[in-house]
Image (tube, rainbow, N blue to C red; front, side):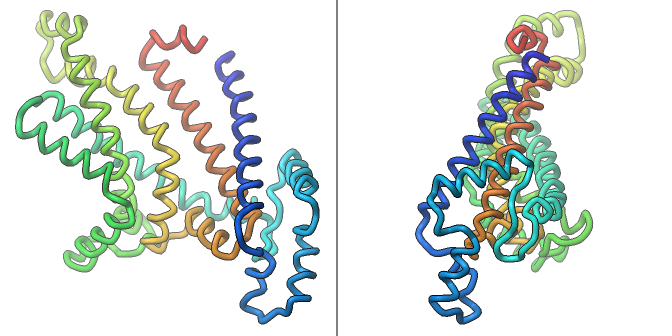
Length: 308
């Protein structure tokens, strides 16, 4: 509980820092949000100036920042300049599709990363190790927009196995989750390979073998338990990449979610929505890393004293 309390205080600081950085970063970004919002309506310079005054863009930066922080303290993310709706409501509407994609991609990444990493560690210096290493490097280095287009071309247009768009049921979710999960699996596989190769030679594993336990039981119970913690740590650290990849993946597969919402807000310079999406991403990152630390402590009793 003390650890959770410390992490909660750190989370508040991280969220404040993220809110401050994104606010001033967007403030100095070139462009006029009022002009972008009225560009399609043929507005005059007077209309743009009036719109800027309505949005408070002519106020001093410190005053704008104070209003922004005060709204956050009340739990309000502001109103969308483009749609005229509460930002929190818009994010909640798009949160579920992104959460579904993130959970499915994480499951795929863990399954592929653990399998490839364990296989490479058990069959070290063999051709299986080489193939597994190549798969891991491809997962790390291949951009999601490129692998997504290849997946659509191969599995949808050529083989007709899966739909090319991400809107719908599980069949529509499968291809985006596979693409994003494959990108995540590379980092997991490399970490698991290194950890399993180290644990296999540990005294407690040698003792388990000496007691006559089956090799499969030793691998699944003793070795994988020790390797699962680092795999979860890598997954948590890569969660920011997962959210960034979701932005691209949702755009490639025409899928609803925070990614498409953020892209639209950036194009129209709808700054309240951009700030809200960044804050939600920061909050999700903090919560996922906290959950990862607690799960690792449950798997490895040696970490519990460090967290106390």
